[in-house]
Image 1: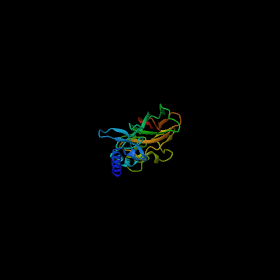
Image 2: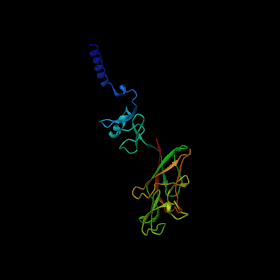
Image 3: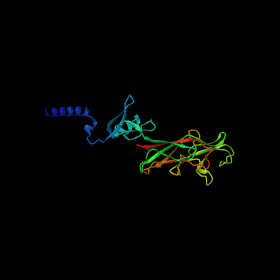
Image 4: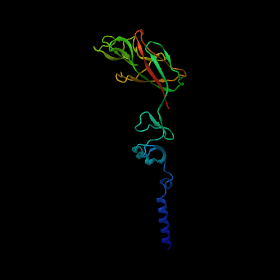
Length: 223
C-alpha cells in the first residue's frame, strides 16, 4: 500500500512539474532580454532562455541596443522602443563663393561625428561641364582630366598644388569624402572628431568669381 502511495505522489509531482515554467524547474537556466516581434508587428521586451535566443533571431527578434532587422538607421533602446541610430546635430550650407561658414552647434570634445555632404555647385562656365560636388568635379578634357572626354574627376588626383581643390574642406583641411565619385547621388559621408568648438566649412578654389550654388553638410551624432 505504501508503494502505491509513493508512486501516486511521484505521478502528482510529475504532473505539477509539467505545468511549471521551464525556468522554475531549471533554476540555473540563463535568461536573456530580447525585443520580440509580435503578430501585430510591434516589438516588446521579454525575457527568454539563452538556448531559445537563436530561434527568436530567426523570427526577426534582436537584443536591446542592436539594429532593428529590416529597418535601416534604426536600433532598439533598452525598453525595445525603436529609435534612430544617429541624431541630426546641425545643417550647414557651404557657399561656392569661397566664404568660410561655421556650424551652429559646438561639437563635443572626443565625440565622433558623421558628416553627410550633398548637392552640386558650378565652378566654371563650361556648358554641361564645370560642376562639382563635395569630392569630384565634372571637367573638360585637359583641365586635370586626361580621359579625352568630359568626365567626373576625383579632386584627390589633381596635380599639385591643386590637389583636393573644389572639395569641401573642414576646419581648414581636406577630409575623405567617401571613396569614389558619386555621379548620381552626389552624396558623400565623412567623419570628424569634436574638439569642443564649432566646425568650419569651405569650398576650396583659386578663382571664385564664376562660382555659384552651394553644398549642404549635415552633422550627425551617433546615439
